[in-house]
Length: 126
Image (tube, rainbow, N blue to C red; front, side):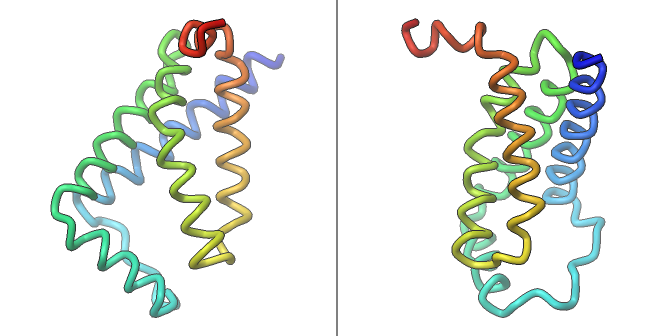
């Protein structure tokens, strides 16, 4: 039962990151109208660094694809970890209203890393 729940959560988690990465590249989802000015300023700063958003988008797409497939799930979770840390920090510092969903995704990320802990042991010399 736990493996089926993990599979469904992994698929949804991966699809969310694939969608997010594709949206960064092709801008097909409209921006909400009630975004605070400070958040728009932060997003504008990210976009002035021309290579940053395509890099994040590529990592999100690749990490999302890898998370869906069980043998590569831990690698995908490791790739997405820095992005999720950035999401958490962005919401803690700039926009606390998105913190709840950020915490949910961060908890899923930690669960995926925990489930793949045996694969991560060589990374930490254990």
